[in-house]
Image (cartoon, rainbow, N blue to C red; front, side, top):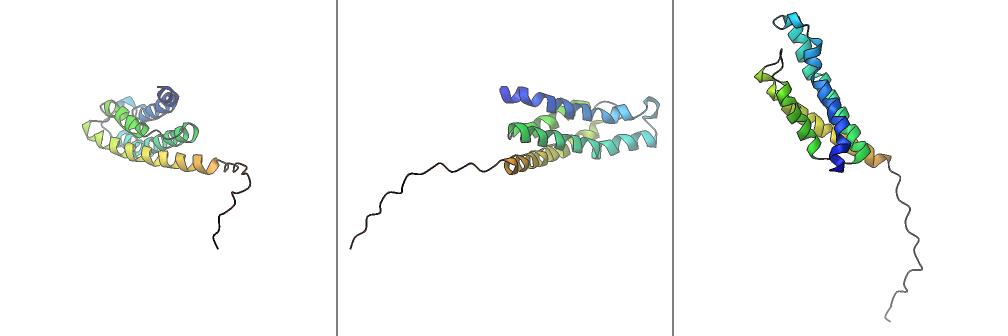
Length: 133
């Protein structure tokens, strides 16, 4: 439960990024080419970057959570029905699942490389070896 509450700010950032297509599209331009171009370019550029960054930051700070990419992809499904999107935008959830997984992998690499190797525990004199003649 603690890991879920730790991931809420990162999930909220990803969900806010999902609203970008609807926010960037002017209200009167749903049918025009410019409004759809803005919406779909943000679906392919902004949202995957936000999803990967949120997953990388979460993993870097709190460790690997395998369910975060699944949760970010599932969070997009209801947003896909907001105009100017329609049910054909559901395929982007798969893209966000993959970019979330890539972000988790990047965060894991950053977390692992950022750690200093642990000092080896002091060892006592090694046990004498038994040799037979």
